[in-house]
Amino acid sequence: MNTKERFLMILDFKKPDRCIDWEFAYWGGTINRWYKEGLHEVNGLVQKVEEGETIGGPGLYWSEDNPWIYAGDVDEHFGFDEGIRRPPVNIWIFPGYEVRVIDEGERKKEIVDKDGIRKIIMKDNSSMPYWLEWPVKDRRSWERVRRERLNLKKDSVEKRILTDKRTMISNIENSTYPVGLLGYPAGFFGSLRFLIGDVNLFMLYYDDPALVKDISSYLTDFWIDCCEEMLSWFDVDAVFFWEDMAGRNGSLISPKMFREFMTPCYRKLIGFLKSRGIKHFIVDTDGKVDELVPLFLETGITGVYPFERQAGNDLLTFRKKYPKLQMMGGFDKNVLIKSKKEIDDELDIVKECLKFGGYIPMADHLIPPNVPFEIFEYYRNKIKQIL
Image (cartoon, rainbow, N blue to C red; front, side):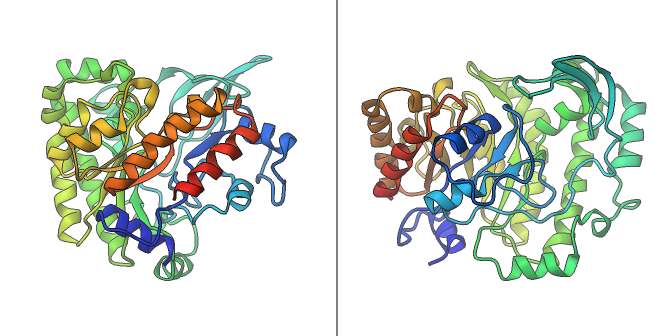
């Protein structure tokens, strides 16, 4: 049985020969540390990485257009299953903005990134950026971005393919790994944060709700058109969305706002995708998600991850409340710097969740640099025994 077959059986709450063996992702500093502590550098990373860079694992969907570097040596060491892949097609800002350095100091620099966001970043990526300015400030600037960067009449889906089309289709048609559509940053909160900025978006919900709805409606149709074209070339196994719309205290917007600004868009997009035979729709959002899960389920979303434990998410509580919710993640990465007894206790939760089906265990976010390779090995070997 291959990974694609296992993935689909798990999402359908059936019993494959075994569960999928995946890990989510790592910080750059983590991989740098592990190479010094026993991880064999067979292929290495494609480039030198800073401490705070995201290094992908098989549970974090990726493709040739992905901004993440992939940790192939970790896969090889632990014998992980093939990861989720998505077609190398740009479904966001295209062409990207020219990356510019505005000011540079010893430890940080001010830049404009490929999404047109002006921000101050640490040179080693050791903290979140300090965002300063976004490309959309009002209706006029939105119209310019829509016309120049999100326009399929100007830049068709075929122009947005980042590799050879025939090779891409052949790889997908012959794949034994799960194929996902959309993904980061497709969503109806997360994507608007990139265009407008968090605080500015919160203000626009009140000051100009019509503009927020116009942007969201346009993105809905834009992604439907992208998906319609790609689905004429190949089949996919699941569709992914990215929101990151919660903190440790819960959702960043109210249920009322979710239903007004996000629900209609999700229902329209998911309705189209269902008409094309797709059954699985999984959203990635950090933070405490107990308030968000029922809202997502109302829209047609079928799965959620990565269930950050430090935000108070309890896997067994979610499983008992939502018996058909697809779940990935949920292992508390923070116990990896504690005792083996605490790791074992956390793995008991994983073991219990696996009994219900519809669950793929892995850490609840990127593995941080304070985790020794020896302890990570202990944790992954224990999971392998459970699987």
